Image 1 (cartoon, rainbow, N blue to C red):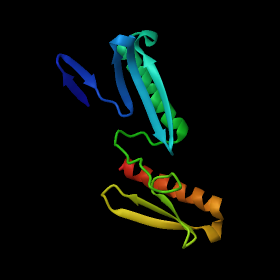
Image 2: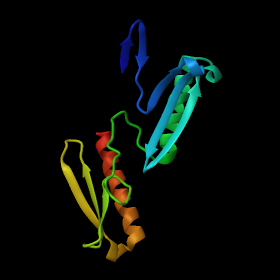
Image 3: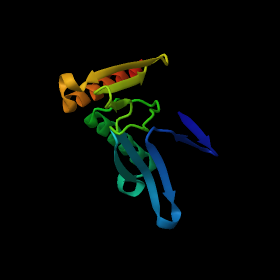
Length: 145
């Protein structure tokens, strides 16, 4: 998506921000990839990369490679990343009373989906992994639609 700013046309890229601080002589692109509660970040300096456009290309390439390495689906859609659960994974919560992990998601047309994974049947660690895998699969399906 192009955004006009005066005479310049600036491209907007998800998870990439432009930093221009004259007083510190800092110019470049800052990339921040968040996935499963961890943040991976890197700064691409115009000076070291050979200019503003070259540093942007390097930043986009690093973001895409990092997401691929982590297993994060590449999308320009914004995804909710706030988790109110003690598991730290969006859409996965522990229900101690029913001895299960509960998984929730929203599909491509906005319909809520839910399922659960039994801790008694799978064990706590395996049940959590299954729940996270289900959540990741459902999120991938939504983003690919």
